[in-house]
Length: 342
Image 1 (cartoon, rainbow, N blue to C red):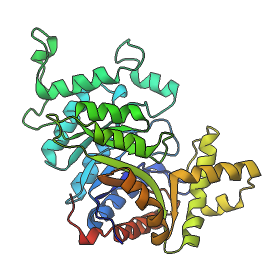
Image 2 (image 1 turned 30 degrees about the horizontal axis):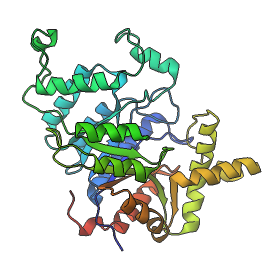
Image 3 (image 1 turned 135 degrees about the vertical axis):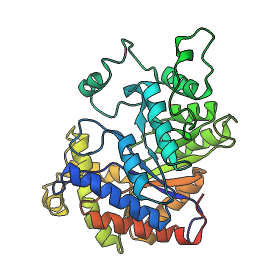
Image 4 (image 1 turned 30 degrees about the vertical axis):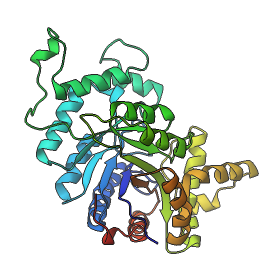
């Protein structure tokens, strides 16, 4: 039975051993158009730096490109890593996007750098001399560019984030731990939980968010997005074959090797040790693989237990057409053509 819940896409513009980064970006545009036609609610793009497996370090640029060639779907960041950027820059860029595509832009914010320490230093070293986690300070400043509630005499009172006739898009806090969920509830913003790489219990984090949400100028009720990784095919056997690429890729990531996604043939020929096969089996707790019936049976109880208001799916396969097919099957399984998009 189809779930009556909005369905969205999270895209990393994954690079494979057979697809160069430039083509991966074009594939993202093609997939977004496909998701738009299928009835997906949102299409979010991530920010990662210095990773040979991820083509896009600038979600705001991709958002503009995708919004320009789609008709209905909301397009946003999943997310912008706020510590890497001056809050004014984020305010300006997303106000521009909102002005150009009113009512279709989302601003998802993350706390992590989205990269290694050396690259994070290169990104931030000219911003200021502060050390440590200043996410709360940056988030507060970002909202002040919208509310114009800087203290009297503050130098920023004379600075206006342009275009000043466009609002900031809806703000979402992203996280894989309990902290971001607690913060999103406290400040009254949307929340997206990254189950696909989280170590914290999704049910506990999302339940806390819903139960402790405080009404705010940003949102009048909670909205929790559960982000999950799915590889779906017509049969369990075909889905398992496609997922072998993701299994080997995750295994390499656990060893600090962020390489392009390998082909199915390379993954199936890899000489796994018993320990590596055990690691893959453990990692499968964050990846749902199978036919529509198999996947829906696995994810439905978790979606209900999390009180998820929306499901966002990341699918990484070596073959671009297989990825599009997975999203098509998922849309049908969720009954996207039969429900009104939120």
